[in-house]
Length: 325
Image 1 (cartoon, rainbow, N blue to C red):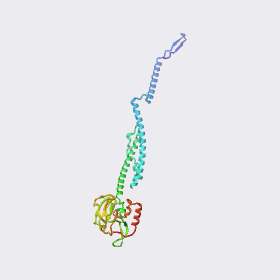
Image 2: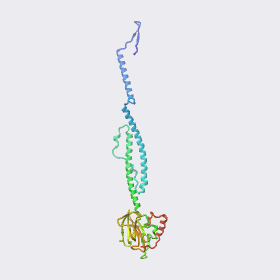
Image 3: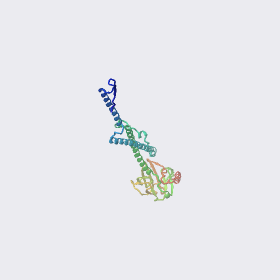
Image 4: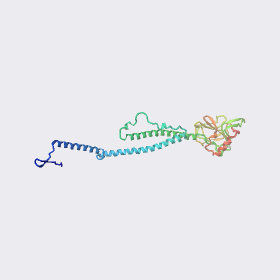
């Protein structure tokens, strides 16, 4: 209720009511409306920037957005753990697996190379959380690339391991005649006296004296390339191709237990001691070839001899005595 104002009329000696002018009334109404509009606009602006007037859908979207942000943070923490595990695996791969199997380490430049060319993440720009989304996406891409490199490396290591296993099985690594069956180790690799001419001659194998019919065993995995008596001096003999450049030869046999083309495993019975060919007495003449070069067989007996047995054989093999063939 508006206030009523009066003034004192000295002519009538009474109070009279002050009537506002029409222009003043219009001005007051205008000021009131203007003030109400401004107050309403300010109030609306404040309300729009708070959650008071948000619709249920807007509130649901806001909760969903906050949930996504939380998920991105958790994802980044998990990626940090994955990066740590991957770094450890890469370190072991370079400094353990690849070194053991004689493969060159993969350089960091290859493992952690970036992505060149155009901006790969342009479609992720312009959003409220673009920086977080782009950073997370980049890390995922880098991890995927490093995992791809590591996967290829492990495939290579697996192939190398399989080759290494096959190599270790193929190397002629055991004595071809059991120690308990030996009469003695008659002659080793080196210069020896020829039993027939008595001249000094280089002996390219090792002679194992044993009774006729003593079992002879394959010293490594391989394929029988020869089982015949067509090589001068060796009599009945067997040659096993072990692969990787290795070949073993077993001479002066009395009979065979294998045939040409047959696959054998280390320790398989392949023949029996005899004295065929250029031989003075029953024994096994044993040779090892590497890349077509005859090498000392004594360097390979780590598969079935103890340290003491190997030392005793080494002493006997080093004596410059008379060979049996």
